[in-house]
Image (cartoon, rainbow, N blue to C red):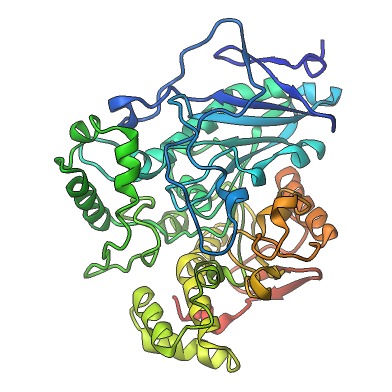
Length: 500
């Protein structure tokens, strides 16, 4: 019997019924992969979900992690962040998209598991950008997942395990290993991919010994292999969070606080100085939450962890624009702003600024400030991860740079953070992405770019090769993705070297 004609699939916890879609794919929404995080359980490792009787309806989106609304100035980021917090405790869930074809029943399709971004405090599987239909249409079983965010997910609290949101992602990978064959997927052929905070989590999982063997490939889109806080930095955030809530900095005290109060307190933690005698703030003040590790993922990968996993890693050409253009800080940037950004992110800021000025003689202060921000947040840490991985030839390393410029906000938004996502998911045609204040701008985005970029991701997940030369520490081959695709060696090498 081919279970894809019958929209019911039986998982280890119970049966689920899907939504049949017109395009020959099936979507199974809101399937639990771990128990609901309640009370003290919010600060414990993820635990298995109770089995259920009968058939669970998997046709409607479920709740997501507690979070506050996110606004980014004059750009509409709702397709990215979704509509905020959908309440309900049973939110450690996955959505699964599968092809409805008979061939899928053999359990031999490649599987892709996506980890959303949102600064470790926002985002969910409900966001319009994470519809997996195009992947299913192209013969991939696509899984998206929710994980704990903010204080419950990432605050480093005495008496609780660190990086609970990352532990949730590992639990979801275990769920995939156990259940995905029932959806037509091959549990030995899993590609974990993520964007922004989600990409930093993917790098963290590459460097997690307990996750070895759960994934075959990984894609890091605008993340950082150098994005983790030290335990000393994290302790400052914990102290501030406990003070904001008027409680002792211990898991037992946090366990008594409601989700509403935790979300509210998290939104008041911005701007803590995390500069220590030995370390800069890797998120340059943008988020008080990240992974907490005393060894950065890039260093752990350099020591050989994740050496058997193929890796595709890249950033966008103008990552920093998202943090400047929509809040009217790009055109108004001064030389002082450039210096201040460099001081926040580098031990030798004067030399850094000089390197960027020399490499970009025509650049405005806004462009220089954005370029330094982009490298501080994503570029330097992505190159460090690619280089560390490429030092172990047991698997392949590939690099890309996404250079297509959005014409949003008077053509200034450019090739900014998150603008590659609609192309990866082949959703560039979504109406809510079009307009002067929408992510892709008022002009019609190039449909062939979406088809080709989405195709490269599918090809990497299927074969381990996205369609260009591997990255090594000698040539650093990088595919520059725009309406034309150009392979370049070591793009902006002076700027790259300024960070090492």
